[in-house]
Structures are given as C-alpha cells and as structure tokens.
Image 1 (spheres, protein in one colour):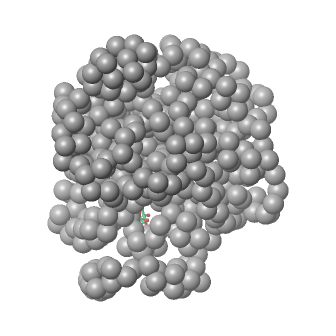
Image 2 (cartoon, rainbow, N blue to C red):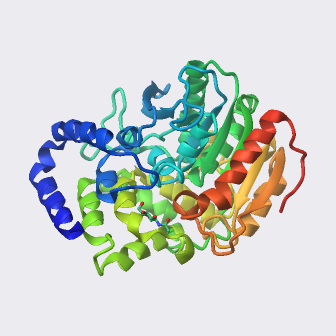
Image 3 (tube, rainbow, N blue to C red):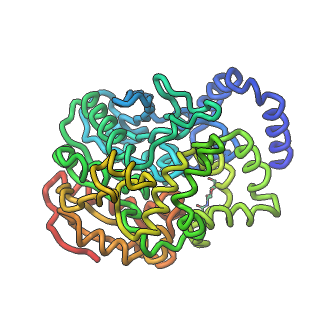
Length: 433
Ligand SMILES: *[C@@H]1O[C@H](CO)[C@@H](O)[C@H](O)[C@H]1NC(C)=O
C-alpha cells in the first residue's frame, strides 16, 4: 500500500518536476483540511512541503518575514506567533524565543519532527513567540539584491562563512524580530552552527549581548580540536585548498537542497526498502550515530529538508577550526589578504570574554562535533557561563539534538524550564555539570 503510494508519488513528481509549484498550492489546501495529528502522518508529504507549508499543515499559525542585510542578502524568517492547543490567543504580546539552525540545515529543523516533539511547536504551546532564522545561502535565504547564487563561474554570492552569518545575519534578524514583536530582548536557542554564529555575533558585536536574556547552546561548537566527525576530519587538512579548488571550478555552494535528493530520500530511505541502513549511514558520517534516538521512519522527511545548502567557505572555516585548534576568524589564505581584512597576518581569535550574555551549554558524551573537552574549554572562557548541562543519555549524538526520538524529555523540557526560570529570575548561577 505504502509502496504503491510511493510509486505514484515519485511518478507524479518526476512528471511534474518542472512545474511543481502550481500543483503545490492546491495540495496544501487539501492537506490542511484533512490533517489533525501529533506526529507526522505522512513522511512523504512532509518531505515535499516547505517549512511554512508544514507548519500550516499541522494547523499552527505561521508568518513568513524577509529582511535584507546591509550587504544585500535577503533572509527569510519563519514565525509561529502563538500556540495551537494552548496559549493560542492571537495578538498577545509574548516573550520572544529566537531559534537558529546548524550547518546545512534550516528553520525546518525546529518543526520537522512534528507537534509534540519539535522544539518550535513546544515553545509555541508554552506561550512563546517563536522566530526561526535562516542563514544566508540556505534554501530559504538563497537570494541577494544584486548577486546571483547560480551565476556561472562567479561565486561572489557564496563568499561568506559563519563569520558573516554571526556578524551580519544574526544581528539583522534579531533586530527585525524585536522590532515586529515590540520587545527589547529575546531568548536565543541555537544548534551547532547556530551556536558558533551566536558566539561570533556577541564577541564581534558585544552590544548585542544586551538584547539577549539567555542563550541555550545545543551541541555547542566553537573549539573543535577534538572533533571526531569522519566527514569534517576528512576535509579539515584540505581546509585551505577546498575553497581555492572550488573557486577555480566556479562552485561556491555545498550540498544545496534538491528535488533529486528529496525523491531519492523517499524512494531509498523509507521503511520498506533494504537501502534504508545506507541512508542512516549517510547521516552517521555527518553527525554521528545513535541507534536509540534514530527514527528511521522519518528519514524521507529529513532528506526532504536537509541538506539545505551552505557555502563551501562555511565548511572550510570549520576545517580551519579543526586543523588550527583555535576559534578564529576566517583565514583568507594568505598573509597579505589577512592583513588587508583584519590588519594582522593571522586571523584574530574571537574574544569569548566579551560574551556577557548568560550562556547555558547543553552537551553530550558522544557528540563527534562538540567534544566534551572542547565544550569545557569554551565554558571556561565565556564571559558569563551560567550552566553546563550534560544530556542524560551517554549515546546522545549531534543530530539527536534536533531529530532524537526523546529530545523533548532529554533536552527540550529542560531548556524551556531554564528559559522560564531566567524570565522569573529564579535561576541561581550554578554549574549543573
Ligand atoms: C517515528 O516516526 C513516525 C512518523 O512520524 C511515527 O509515527 C513514530 O511514532 C515515530 N517513532 C517513535 C519511536 O517515535
């Protein structure tokens, strides 16, 4: 039955590949009328809807906002302003929580596991005004006022790393969200690169510390000296040549979202196909493996949204962090170009002591990208570290922070309690290691 549906879906998709858009609207309208469920009721449908469509499908209020950065990138934000089942009165002023995704991901990370499981929905039900950012270059923010991301042999659009995401995108999106919501401060929750970019913002532009009530770093990534991700370790020694080579080839983008991947994910990673373990292994290569928290059934939906694209330079910058064992600005590749950009031969370190936001680090024993020793060093150098929270499951891994079956019980409930405690001023500064 599922297999027949799948075949029909894939066939339809291939046939309509060039003209998906107009069919999409009608499809969503039907979906919204027919769905009222807690988990994903159809992972194939969920693979083909974009984040706002998905949110609408599960009957949550959704607003799409765009904001343009000083350097011309057009960023799309997704807002769930209030809850569906609780705290569902429109137009009440609520505390803002800003969510920021990791490398190769998007706002979809915070909703893909569905109502009752995903952080975006949980926060809305708890009475928060939820804003989800999208970094320049990903599926939703692949636009610029003058530069063309698809320009042949011209990679100017892609000449950014997570330094620019932290230094320019985050301040722009945060100011915008505060302006629209009429608030002066917000809580920030980031995953992986969403933590890296936060540390970049608050160290390079310390005035932004005053706009953040509290920061919750899920799988914090700043120092990467102990990184054990097979993919990143493989790339790290090549960090400085990766960008040079790809520039020569005219490539600035890495693993963009594509219809092909969505279709492949549906066809090869679903519950009825022997190929499914290979899909799990692809995830493992990137983010580590944890059988206990891995819901294989969800893979078609995950591959429909992730990877969502990044610049080659984002990857190269992480490669530099691994190879150099420090948390520094992007190495431009030559002494003279570093001198021109930073006024020094070596790229400067990010000064973590300037980060005066109260920071909570949520980490785990088995995260290949946020090793315990690197997290400890980060904690000891931050300007105002409040707490260090080990996820109470030894095998908890990098992607489980977003897609784990029990992420709510193991992680999100605690984050929400901490946010509430910070608002109520009942949190004592202790190390909950
Ligand atoms: C895995 O995902 C499917 C589809 O959303 C859901 O029906 C199922 O309950 C999930 N399994 C677990 C153990 O959460």
